[in-house]
Every structure is written in C-alpha cells, then in structure tokens.
Image (cartoon, rainbow, N blue to C red):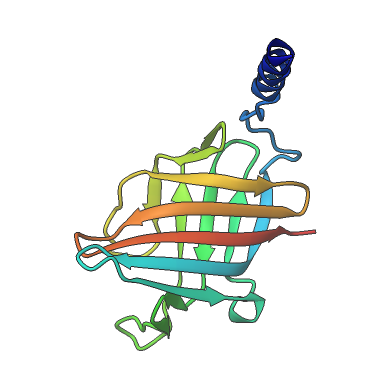
Length: 171
C-alpha cells in the first residue's frame, strides 16, 4: 500500500515538473507605429533607508505630445511634452526664453531581443543636453493596441527608480 502511494506522489511530482510554464516571450503585434502615452507609474526607493514612494499619472495628464514612434527601418524617437513627471509631482521647466520645454530623442536604431528593447544610439534635439548611456527597456506587453514598457533607472547613489509606462497605438 505504501509503495502505491509513493508511486502516486512520484507520478504527480513528474507531472508538475512537466507542466512548467513556458518562459519564452512572444508578442502578438509589431512594435512599428506611433504609441501615445496614457499612464505612468513611478516607484522610487531611497537606498540608504529603503523607504519607497510612488506616483501614478493617468491619461488626463498626457496629451498628444507624449508618444513613441517606432519605424519599420528600426529607427525610433520619443516625444515628451513640456511636463516633467516625478514621484513628487509634475513640473513645467522653461527654457532660456521663458518658453515651456519639450524634446524629442532620436534613436538611430532599436532592436528587440526577447522582451528587451535595446536603444543604443541617441540624438537630442535640445542644445547642450547631456547624452545618456544606451537604454534597455523591458517590453511587458505588446499587442495590436497596447504597449507597456518597464524601465529601471539608476539616477544616483541616493535613489533607485523604476517606471511602468503604458501606451495605446495610434489609429
């Protein structure tokens, strides 16, 4: 009788092992096209204390100046309106002429490997903007209508910041 139970337990364990989830990443749509931002979640952790702060911005906080444009030739650019979003709130920086700032960042190429969106070459449209290192962004969701990107941002030795950004495809 014990051998029978032992056999059943072993068979169940083997079945569970065989039912492991497939961890390969597949997306049901191409990323090419224009994607308008409609939600942003920012999480910030203070390294020294471990304290966390979060902020969520919804569709009412974005207009058509906030979008990604991915082209079929693997070039891309991101357009950001004049609003800067942080865990502390929104700000509206002005340029030297007292006008609201906004910018576009151009990428000479992008590649997708698994769920990683790699953005290696950057061009800013504003004069004197510092050139950041290449970006790697995780694609969390990509289908015909929705794109969700997750990014870990090393801002300093003081904070760890991550963002989840939600987009809807332009029609």
